Amino acid sequence: MSMLMSYTDPVLLEAAREVFQEHFRRDPSFEKEMDERRRKLMYDDIIYNISYLLTAVHFGDEKIFGAYALWLFELLCSLMKDLDRDRIGQQMTDHYQILSEQFALLPDRILDEAGRNNAQDYLRKAIRITQEAVTNIPHSGSFREGPYGAIRKAYLDALLIGKTELAHQIIQEARRNGMDLPVIYEEILAAVLHEVGELWHQNRITVDKEHYITSVTQSILPRFYDDLFSRPRIGRTLVVCAVGSELHEIGARMLSDVFEYHGWDTYYLGAALPHAALLKALSEYQPDLVALTVTMPPHLPECEETVRAIRSEFPSIRIIVGGQAFISTSGLWEKWDVDFYTPTFSDMIRWAETAFKDQS
Ligand code: B12
Image 1: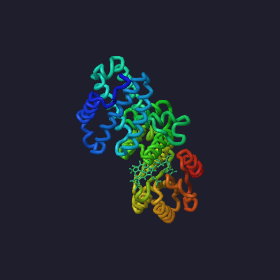
Image 2: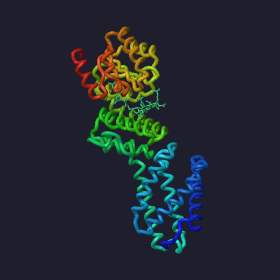
Image 3: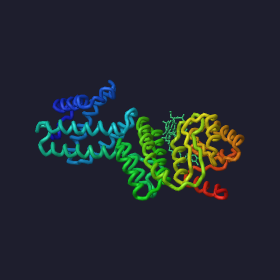
Image 4: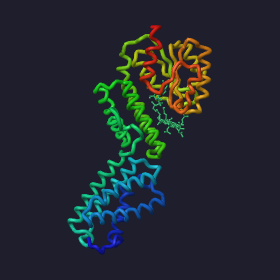
């Protein structure tokens, strides 16, 4: 490439126009994703991308384009909040592919053969860098640390790029390697859902992705059931539900499964259970224990009301409460007439083993 060549050479502008149009020809989603404003920016961006690529080729320095590809991907993720990282990654890898096809056609006046080859090489690397960036999200706290960090990340990465089957395989493999149900539930599946909530909160993933990951997780739980029901029974009964209009129910369901795993007979009543329906169920199943879960603090008053009603109508049933709503209180549960609260399944099972020991 000549030192004096302009990035706005008509041949390059024509190539940019071709790249722009090819995106719309190749991918029908572009029509609805790109409004007028975005189309204008997109065209300018293509010219900008070409200028970076030619600069990298000019200096024979792949890092110039590689670093730019990463920067551009993160910028687009911040700007196009309605699209998730996976989709933007797809757009950008298509983009580098289309650019590569156009660059192969550039005349020697713009790039000689060696330059064209270098450009192809840099574009291939930009594709790889972008694909890696899709799942390379800064995670909160200890998400990637400890003995379960790697598997949590592998499971979440698979879901962030829509690989449902791979996500299932990762969990099945953990099972085959001897990780038992309560650990998989709490250390992998629950931890990943908490992280997904963080990513949604930070606007790093879109709501549809959050729902998809939730639904895949829900589809994984029944795969443990053969094991669950074949375990020895201990003659204890548990009723579990998410109170009031609480829609977050996966914690409640997991809790029910963990008790079932420890030999309890459980009745999991799902989300948003009306108060009266719960009392009816308690009278029918006569459980030893009832577990109530609350995620959203506005449902706490309803939970308190439910606890009062259970105490007065079924004084012999023990009550435990849990869920994220309690984490952000100053020990609220201690002011209620409940038997136990803990944020973790392992503590809960330890408590149950002691609390029901004398009576078995
Ligand atoms: C999936 C999800 C949803 C799904 C729920 C689907 C379903 N079928 O359950 C849907 C889409 C319905 C949803 C809706 C909403 N959600 Co939502 N959701 C989540 C998400 C991503 C995962 C929830 C989950 O299943 N976690 C995994 C389970 C296993 O964890 P857990 O419930 O905490 O349970 C663990 C412990 O707490 C404990 N435990 C739980 N219960 C009990 C009970 C007992 C007795 C014991 C001992 C222990 C225990 O054991 C479990 C294992 O460790 C969370 C993120 C997060 N931090 O969890 C956000 C999150 C809870 N949602 C949030 C919000 C804001 C909402 C909405 C208001 C969004 C909206 N604008 O519409 C609505 C409100 C719905 C409603 N009316 O209740 C916020 C809540 C913020 C807050 N504290 O106020 C969160 C934290 C996301 C975030 N980071 O901001 N959500």
